[in-house]
Amino acid sequence: CTKKAKMAKDNTNGLAMCRVLLAELEAHQDAWPFLTPVNHKAVPGYRKVIKKPMDFSTIREKLANNQYLNLETFIIDVNLVFDNCEKFNEDDSEIGRAGHNMRRFFDERWTELLM
Ligand SMILES: Oc1ccc2c(c1)N[C@H](O)CC2
Figure 1: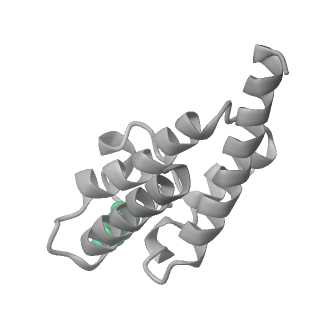
Figure 2: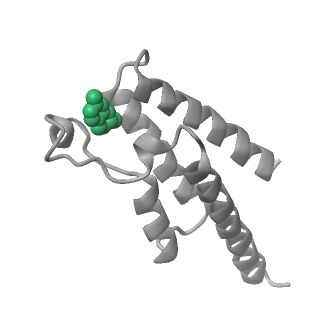
């Protein structure tokens, strides 16, 4: 097959993995802080502190709209969810711990799927 055909296959495989990984993130018991966008009108300071909000429902929408080129661009958005969480929450808080748990789960799962 041509190099282009191989690339297309890799992207298809990569996008299939995005769907599997996103479903597992959404189903995780510690996903609740990350399922929908933070209501920045209800959370003082959030819009000022977090320059690039991201959440699992927005990632789901972007995936459905074919806005992820490959697994890498998907992983960048998932990591943005967890980086925002670390920035806004104490490590020793319920949401802070949920973020660390979810990041560990995600890192383990995508490396398992890729290795
Ligand atoms: O006490 C609160 C209240 C609201 C939020 C947080 C903590 N952390 C989330 O990251 C953003 C929303």
